[in-house]
Image 1 (tube, protein in one colour):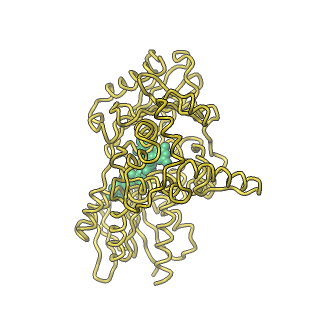
Image 2: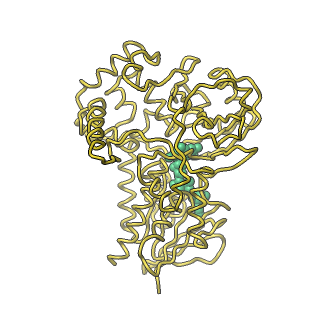
Image 3: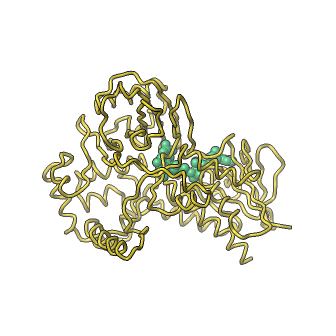
Length: 467
Ligand SMILES: Cc1cc2nc3c(=O)[nH]c(=O)nc-3n(C[C@H](O)[C@H](O)[C@H](O)COP(=O)(O)OP(=O)(O)OC[C@H]3O[C@@H](n4cnc5c(N)ncnc54)[C@H](O)[C@@H]3O)c2cc1C
């Protein structure tokens, strides 16, 4: 008889794990994916209303990390990839009641009004700050203050972290969330030194006709799939076919004395499996593992999540006038504003609004403002409109408003996260056949979820090949 692997959760992590297992040359393997909702995608889905494309979660992925891009190629989506429009390159920070452009180069930085003269000098002094030799965990805030000074940390770094994690820089672990920054300090002695050395490496690789995707790669371009990110999820589901079982929440997990796993889903009798991959959120993993390994369950349950609401407002182009050319703006989390940031979605991806219309997509809430998730739709929309009135002088009534809430949107890799993940891995190694993936452990960005899904599938395969 062949082997069976059960995957719990049909977000990108579970779908990609199933896909990599299916694409492997393992014969005689039954892949079963259970998803509790009646659709795949988890937080990554696309809806369509009044001609607008509305992303419930990720707006895209960066094309300089190969995992998500390769996956799209494997699924035959290479001709459907859409890069952010070049006009959308400028980014802004909402500070002191106006938008201030994030400088793109040294000259712009010197002229910028984002930091005081003293704050700028402190950033420039980064080159002369010795690298830390300490190997302990460190918050993003502490790293930033050490390297670029308090002012730049509280404005630039805070806004950057808000845009990605909607979290608090004083709580988030730098090595767990942005390991590349620590690598840059360790390898090159500092961030500026690293950027100069890496730019040089890139020039050399380009002259030799090579492409670079490692620490030295450029920031990457936001990329989506024509029709929205939901199309990637749909394509995965199509390729997996009847292996995907929707509206089938896994309610219990059990491990027999012979090491066989028993999985109960969707009110059906339990099915047995040789391996189980949990790709559901950490709280759901914790719940399923509680009867099997209480310490492992407690570790998973203690991973915190930031809540977020996504609000899209769409206007007739004539009502908006000329909007700032650019990608969008962020508001540092520290300021406690309800709106964390707004992207000019139809400037980035014109397909996201119908002809003659303009779409803005705001993220509200985050770690510091969980109260915002309790606001009703009208209050959320009004907060976005108030922001747009101040930042872009848009006073007209929107022709479309759309709201989506995620009470547990983004896992927060707080201080101690890497040590926690080591303990989780150690506990899993005592339960052969159990694998954990998903955005709560080794990376929140979509491409990181895909990379971890690939690693997880390889681990399942290696285990089977060696047993
Ligand atoms: C608002 C928002 C914006 C984002 N923007 C970006 C972005 O622009 N770029 C980027 O790279 N990343 C972005 N992210 C992050 C990225 O989208 C997520 O980290 C990623 O999609 C998570 O995928 P996942 O499969 O690990 O988890 P999820 O998408 O949470 O999927 C988990 C799945 O498990 C299912 N499940 C739960 N319990 C059970 C059970 N008991 N049985 C069966 N199924 C179960 C759930 O229904 C869900 O479908 C964003 C996230 C959010 C929320």
